[in-house]
Image 1 (cartoon, rainbow, N blue to C red):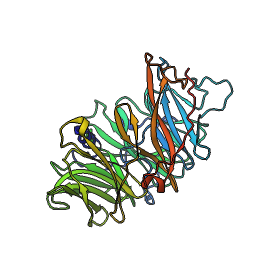
Image 2 (image 1 turned 120 degrees about the horizontal axis):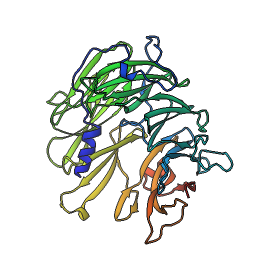
Image 3 (image 1 turned 90 degrees about the vertical axis):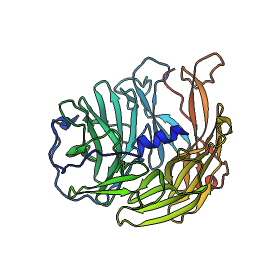
Image 4 (image 1 turned 135 degrees about the horizontal axis):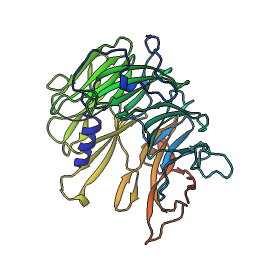
Length: 434
């Protein structure tokens, strides 16, 4: 399970190399917008209750809407450059490519489902009225906005050489906040700039210099007027830096050496003002602590999760107010004998629930993973299937090339937490690149 530690080190044990006073001017290298030469200055009004609208590690190739689910798929098995956008309507459990033009080949700029990118990341604004896509184009990383049906696509920001988006995306209901990393050689240090983008208009209204950037730094939580950046604090420690959007003030928090916990730091996750820390002290159990970044209060949430080693704990997300924690028992030292567990820790009560729903992928037995949350149900990956490289949905022959695609399903929350495999499988789309 060393891979789990590597992932956690890269995505969660993030660091900032030094602090500088924030400046409200736009660095030269960040003055490139897709639709205007320079961002306009916004009024210095305090945002109202900023929050993350993506996961803590940022957007990915799939995102949820209020009643559905989007995903970007690269044209597998073809030399063509580009990705197609698909949408799942959960009311009828059917997926389709996001284009209604008759006879469209879904590989030209006039197609609302086609993007000229090698890979892309999706997210929606705070009220799910605007869909955004970050893509890697031949000109560099680009940010587009569009209507939920894929129409009215406009370029919001085109990164210059040395620039790239990094970390989670936050919103205060009117503005989006994105981290923009600058690795331009003309600067002595790599830097991070905070872009402020009007959610509905898509205009870049403010760019604020933040700090010298370290490759492991990232935005990973938000609350009140505060953006939270994780910050490595040394061996077995965890830290974060709070940045006040209204005042530009910065405050550092260090968790360790008895300040917050007394054991070895294993991993962390965040939700709003709460930072959840996993620590090992002694014996065969570990602690889950809830640290309130607003007040500094610490609460022991749970002390019953099993401990099998420092590298064997992975927090995969927070759904339905519960931390999803995967733990591996590797004590046998033989891959075939490794045992995997998936627990859910209630962030309010500390109660632990174990889920055992799994599916087979080749020689691997994988947990049914939550992709999106709705009022009473989850969208999950409940299985996988092979198709031919041609992408026509046919089953691959034993001698032919194949790609493995996920099988998505809807399951009620009550069935999921009761380990009752009652799925409504999504009818996935046939792919256009036959």
